[in-house]
Image 1 (cartoon, rainbow, N blue to C red):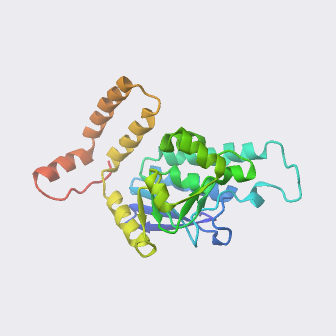
Image 2 (tube, helix red, strand yellow):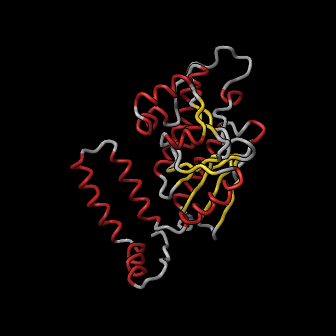
Image 3 (tube, rainbow, N blue to C red):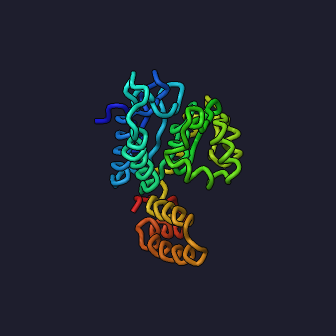
Length: 266
């Protein structure tokens, strides 16, 4: 079904992991792989069985960014005037939209270098788990471009204006540990621990009350533009919506009965 993704399914379908599967190019992004990822995220969002989604890369890299051979016609020195805009609008923006509005938690498993659009592909996910050897680089400026894939929206919010400017202007490589210290990465694991520790976290996420996580994501997203008064009103509305879910009832009953909850994600 997917030409450039390798899909793994775990925990009776509750977890799906999409691996970018072009290790010979360090998983550089192409129009087909961007479309595949967008479709994968959308399908997982709507699938009632799926409770958690992850993105990773095969081989030694997470993603090296846009494949320039795919973007341009070789030998055309000047290229089409608006080819870059078309790629951003038609391929990157729809993917960013699907990831950020996905009804399930979306986790980036960064197994190696994440560069340019590859770095932003990780950072638009709900959180990032990184291998110790990995690094992140906003390398757009190295070829005369600006951060896309949501970069100009998320980087200042994640890092603050000065550090976002510094990393975007210089393309500086940040190690996994540096990225964690800046709040870009949730956890960093050694090479030996990366796979098992990440899977432990993904298993936990696959058994969480996904309906509440969806509402939490919605509240956090709207907080960027809301006043405090508007956000407090939104919290009241969404908390009531959460309280009407089956997961909430199960959570309360499990607490009262002193047992482990069995959430269904609805």
